[in-house]
Length: 283
Image 1 (cartoon, one colour):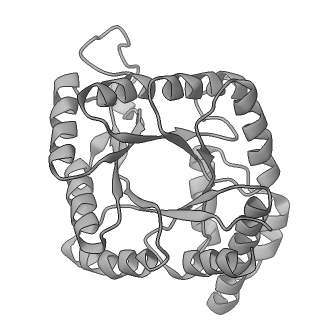
Image 2: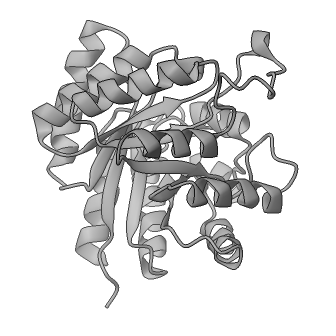
C-alpha cells in the first residue's frame, strides 16, 4: 500500500492590511490538513523582506505550525544577513528557505570578487548554519535554472548547497512527473542524499500560469494546453479541471514513493485543499 504523503504550503506576503487579513483564514484552513510546515516568500532583491519576516512570525503564532521565511543574499552585506538571521531566530523562526535571489537588472553584472557579500546560495547556507542551527530548504530545478548552462552543471550547484548544510531541496514547479523522476535519478547519481521535495502548482488561471512558466522556463506540455482550452470564461469548469490535474499529478507522485509534496498555493485554498484530500483519501 502506498504511503500517504505529507504536505507543506507556500504563501507570498500580503502587501496591504486588507490582503493580510484575507491571508489569515487561508492559512488557518490549510493548517487543518496538518502540514509539516509553511513558507512565506518575498520579492526580488529582498523588496518585501520585512513583510516576509512579520508575516512568517505572525502566521506561526496564529496557527501553531512551523513557518519558514524565504531569505535571499543578493545585494545584502554579510553583516546585514547576520542581523536578519538573528531577528528571525529571535522571533522563533527556525526554518529558512535560502536562495541567491534574482539580480536586479540595474545591478548586473555582480562583482563576484566583492567579499562583503554572499554571491551564491551555498555561501548563504554555510553562513546561516554558522550562526544558528536553522533547518534550511534550498531550491532545485528539474528543468535546470534559467541561468544554468545545462542540467548537470545545475545539479553540481545543488550539490554544493547540500554539502553546505541544507536540510532538503524543494523543486521549481513542473507539469510532467517523468521530468521529476529523471531529475531524482540524476541527483542520486551525483551523490545528493537529502530529500528532494517536488513543488506543485495549482492552476486557477491558465494564462497567468503561462507567465510564471515563461519566467522560470518550465515546460507547459501540449496536453495541458488542451485541458484548459476555451475555459477562460467558464470558471466552474476551469476549477474542476484544475483540481483534477493537480490531484492526478499528486497521486502519481505518491504512487512513485514521493513522501512529501510542497504546494505553491498562490494564497488560495480551493484547488490545493482538494488535491491534498484526494491524496489522503485515495492513496
